[in-house]
Length: 555
Image (cartoon, rainbow, N blue to C red; front, side):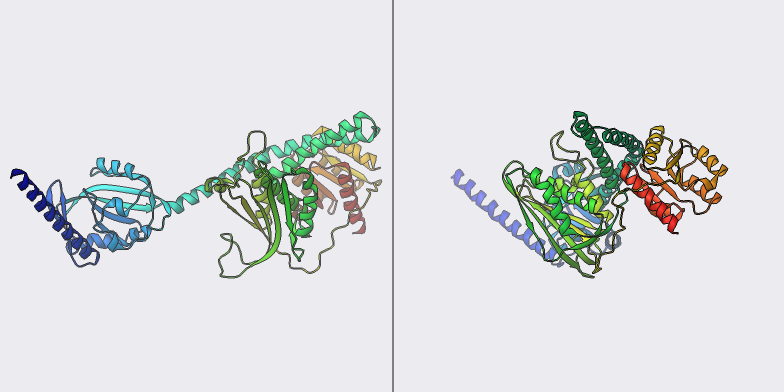
């Protein structure tokens, strides 16, 4: 009998619970449809009523004017109020937020951490960063400031939620820009001294090589020395290009020819397990670019793709096409200017990249290769070259599904190519008198011997001040001045200005391993006829000297 009464009591309680649940559902429905003006909150202090409208209207008005999301939560987790900004941030209508549990409407990835902080939050408030999942499934980083307050005799938490996703994106871009600037400063600092050292190695190795029999072992050894020195020179150029401090020598070129020339050189270097498919377009895809730098772009992208496919036989696809970005249409790359573009596509079927790797792909010295397999500069250099040519880059990749790199370069619209400045096939030399100035005694001796071998009468000094004194004594006795830029007491540009005051029109060649204060345009404006980048070989020096002297004679 007692047992039967217990069952009856349980059944009665169950019916009562179901009735209460029906009442709660009806209340929530009414709240969401704005059919009620208050919420009944049951908490540690018993049943309390929170008014949704009326007395709290000033509070609501303030919350609605905020740029951040604002939300009020009872101590039991029920959402009492939120503003439109928070609803927009979450991607959920207001009537699906108020009256629900905070954990239900705000699926924080760091929910347990947020709960722990709210549990210890007092009237002084607390703050932290938490990852929030929106209704659409997008993860955003938020800053949550919380304070325990009492509204209408109801204990609750007031939360201010700020979306930090865009701010973090800007901070990441700023850190990357600062990293690039730091590397650029480092590159500029070492480039001058390193190029001077390489200039001496290349120059004197060339001289000894000329006096060595072609069939002797020393000839081969010197050839290898020159090859290594040239590799060092190219590495410095890559670093300067990466930091966007190298000056490209642009001319109209067809991208198709550059791709095919590069593939001829790269083909033997690829393992036999990689199949290269080149989709040649009908158009030649003409661009205004530095051919050597375009070779570098294609080489870096192809070797990077080949490395991603080294574990198994895969396919490397290369294609070129044209694209038009119309005014007002969404561009394939953010901030891409409208216009006509030539598109280079390099894709592989290798290991692919995750989102985190893609975000760092163009960062300096970032690499997924093992130690000793790469410098991490390949894609950074490529990105710097493309950007320096007014182009854009995009990358698409998924783990296990390969990668696809897209390079957009402005299309060259002219129908006919401008004729290149013709260089003499063999340096002729001459009898003119040349003043050579460089603070490196090894380079003074090197260029004195080089020019003397071509028949020129050479006067040389390691001091810009001494060079100026020599010129003042006999300004008409010199036909040309070749001066280094970075020298103590008197820079090359300053020396050129003083020389031109004494004798306007004197031909001047300015040489430099690196300088952030001089460019071909600035040098020309200062009266310098040619800017010669170190290290240069004997033939290049002779050709530049010959052209400058010939131009002066014709003028």
